[in-house]
Image (cartoon, rainbow over all chains, first blue to last red; front, side, top):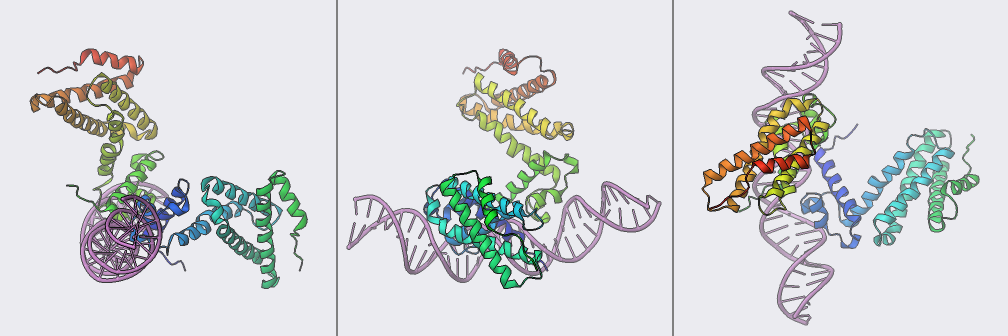
Length: 186
Length: 186
DNA sequence: ATCAATATGTTGTTTAAACGATAGATGTTT
DNA sequence: AAACATCTATCGTTTAAACAACATATTGAT
């Protein structure tokens, strides 16, 4: 079933994305030109356009594919969604947000809306898939709602913690677990 | 005058060479297959053969281009050949030899002849070029002899030190400077 | 020693990427 | 505001690399 994509495509995509991530740490997003990116990626500028529509398209894909994958990977060891998984994801979100707010500096604020959208989308898809595996008897729409609530609640809580940082994240996440019910009964 | 080489060629060469250097740190040379190298380099196996004749050809080019460049670079700050330059090169050789004897481990001994040949070639070319700049009035053949003697003597001394390690390299190099005359008078 | 599996080179064909040229947008200096 | 440079985006042509297939070696286990 695998489509067998030409490895050159994968390599070029990775070169461009990695170069962009690298540049984002030094320059502001608006000051990064396509030429900057393709130069650093050792790729022709025209080639950029056969992979991405523009810089924003690239940012979107970098966030969803490259960055979100890290978060997912950290929790992919867990078999089912449980309190441990929730804790792990919460901490991952904070870890990621902290790292990009350090890396991107000034340009960070300008892109929080995009980042938030992508983050919630990915989280929702992730929860939805896993919920269906975990509770195959529940109706799809019901599990979808469950996934939406979980992803929004978790992301919102993480953002709230980021702004206040009153307690330790480990203690904070305990509070979330008191609110969200993890059980589903047939 | 620059030939303007297709960047894909440079990129692929670098990918292969870097992958090889990386693998050399983990595996013995004889156990590294072309497939290993091209896999790590994200390059097709057939592509390898349009850049290198075989594994030995690759090793040769890695040593002369990639590694020797480091040594040269360390002394390229110096304007002319003097006692400081000699010291710097001597220490660079030792540094390089120590690092590959740590990295390549068992396969190291098997390739010392090749490494030695390449090292002396590169050193000789380096000294020859610089001697001609420094003493343009001297005859070319005379300076060539000078370059040969310098390169062999330095490399030999470095190898001798490596095997015995009696004194500190800084003290050892002083002894060399007592033997080799650095002056040239018209 | 035999057989199977894996590695080495090589070749013809297909495809992704490089190149050069282009036109329009954006931005900076005078 | 006009001149200038730089960036964006696209397109046809050329080239390097991917692919698949092949014959021949090496290796390794039975």
